Amino acid sequence: NDRVRCQKCKFGKKHDCIRPKLSPSTVNRELTTLSAILELARTSRKIPENPMRYVKKLQEPDARTRFLLQDEKERFFNALQSNKQLLAIVLIAILTGWRRGQILSLRKSVLNLTNQSVTLIRSKGAKARAVPVSSVVWSILTDLSEKTDDYLFINSRTGKQLLDFDRSWKTACRDAQIEGLHFHDLRRTFAVEMLNLKAGEFLIQSALGHSNIETTKIYAQVQDTALRESLDILAGSEKIYNSTIISPSSEYSN
Image (cartoon, rainbow, N blue to C red; front, side, top):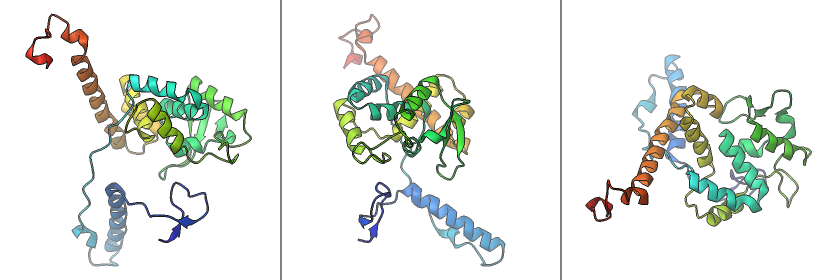
């Protein structure tokens, strides 16, 4: 293998690292970019035609719909009580929808004391932007800023910026008896709860920093999943089965 810096340890020394397998969506984005470049060449008469017209894109899996349900959230918070730094990270993610890299890159210098907002770093090609935060998130951020000179989240072993917390994450998920949870699912949890609070799609688009409203609409589909799961929980509850509507002996109780 080539000596490279993988995404997880990009700030560390070069080492023998297995190159990660690219997802179909990543490949398709690269194909789209290449097609756009070749199309410019075609319209400029540099090439006779765009050869990408014959290239089929890969089939992408259905959009991930995982998010934290209320009972999972309570168990998760309880499991995080012994790790205050990870608890702060999780709270910020659920209350803002920020990405992992944006949270770990927070520094004292990005806190705008005059208007209780935070200047987020560029993400996925987007420009840096100042976003307002709730009083709860602001309290967390200012409390962290009083304990550091630069980055808000510090690796206790190295004293430098925290870059990874996978081990602590897995431990918390195990203690909370939560399976299949990714950190990015907290961003989805934020969007679903905003939708449940009747926040409009354009407001959520602004909060998440989406340049395209179509990306935000994916989260509206997730809300349908949340509703369906809640209906299933209701339909399977003892209150329903013990009611006069469905008796325990009914064929619907099996």
